[in-house]
Length: 217
Image (cartoon, rainbow, N blue to C red; front, side, top):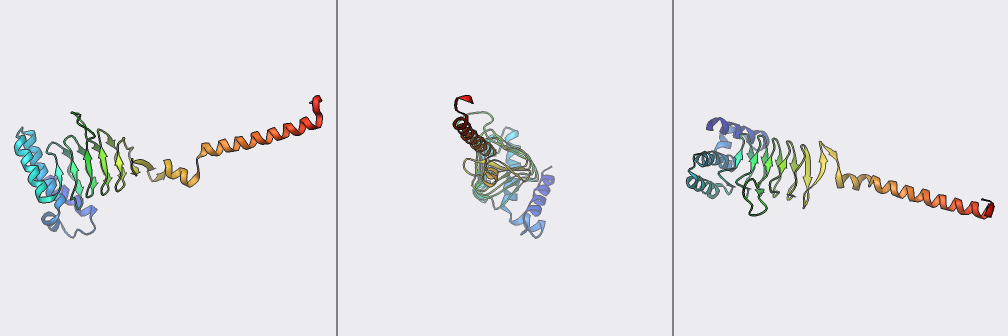
């Protein structure tokens, strides 16, 4: 099982990094692959209730790779952590297969609450450099989180989120939200302006008729 997951992690690195030349090089030199391998062992120890040993393993991994993953975090095989330094993944976080996580990302909590308090990341997502995904929220399959974004709410599948706080600007490649408003204008505002113009025109027409017909109107 361990080696099957390792092969899937290496394959994910080969697929997502154009600089990767071969699987042997990835196995030897990629800190993200190393961190996931150490995490598999730490997670197994944690599930065996050897929690202190699991935490020691995860801290050793952090020392070697600069990537901190709590041993209780659930990370599917086939995840790729690119560059990786500064990545933090919390205790109750979950990450789906095919997801790519870049350096400086945090999958963290928002306070001292217990229970499920870290995000659930779907399959085939992209968490760009420096992004923070915080709290017990869900990021749908195929979603993309922009660099430096701070995400505090659920993200729909195949959505693109940018900014602080994070806002959805695309879904399935189609523009939405603020980006669409900036490009095409607010449709509600346009309707209101059109109604005001018609109202002014009617008022002017009424005045003209009153002046022409007076009391006979």
